[in-house]
Length: 446
Ligand code: MV4
Image 1 (cartoon, rainbow, N blue to C red):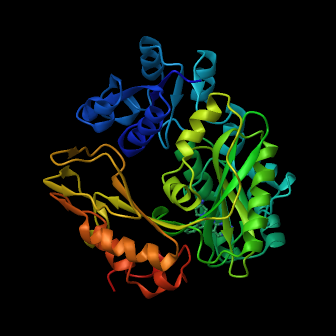
Image 2: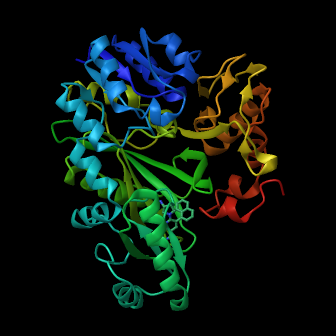
Image 3: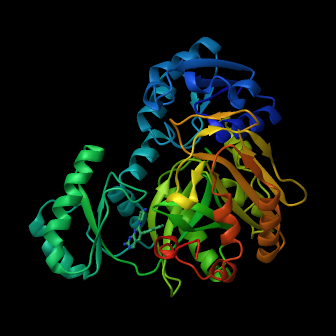
């Protein structure tokens, strides 16, 4: 069993991991930047080590500092959380070389899923449906023209090193292809140092639905149902829920079985997410695999009655999987509360939390690291809380969310709470008839 866990992260996820570790009797080590000295993860961990200046690059992304912190405190495992080093195969490898358990999959699985073209080939080979398109990368513009004719328009050009919408181009007609190919390559080269691109048929009005998978070190793999993540703005998720309002037992079985096969084919270990596009005929296509715990994991926890972080720590300790694959028990919704002003294009709103009241009561969960007097630093992600509700029905979870948003008071900064209050009364949200384009094509204030 892990004895002492270093948490290589900050904010709510650092706190979430500390909570799970404490419940298992695992000692905890927080690391923090100079900007996070007064953070709750520092206060609630058994030990804390400063790892550098505020900028992420110099602290939470600083591998030598983090490994040194593990060394001096005698930590035998590191949980990377999400973001920062969570999908950095080199970091996972260094942990292994130093005799530290990396809470996550193998470096090989991280590398293979990190290259979007190899990931697609791997999933296709495992029998997972993928979006029709190029077989691997498209090295020249001549190849692009030929493949585009075969695939048909409209199409998407995507960077193999991309993900989350970066280095992506929509191409409606052949006349736009040359320019899109060149700019996508250039952007990918500049952003990732890898200009390789691939081509896919464009899927119209898709939903973003992802399957949570979980595996142990003995080859046992299960899935824990789906999350609906279509309410996004500029590729930032704002509301997630489990189950998806469009799910059917047949689709869940097909997507779940495909995901288990896909994960097994890369000898996956721990918590992973397979992202799909689902079209209006309920065809599903593999998009990406995330080899980390995700921000939205609580809706799976509340819907399927699991503690995913606890399970990550048990599996990393070498225990056999005890999770049971079964249908969702509850409906759960998560609203991301960001320090952003939704009335001014969601611009960042850092500052001091002057007063604070967290909602509570039955069916309400708040995952947050903020407190009255806390100063939100400008250096990191703007998420300050996740508000999660759960009830036997979707309508029940929405009713609880409306009530919980009314109780949620954050003074001193602007937040996305007004946006969420409006969404909980939005007829399209209530009906469940939205796709990934919804927020980019509808004014939430209207
Ligand atoms: C697509 C697509 C339609 N067709 N691929 C956006 C993020 C990146 N992970 C992939 N994305 C998309 N890929 C094909 N072939 C539409 C999107 C997309 C999207 C996907 C998920 C959630 C929100 C989105 C918003 C715009 C476009």
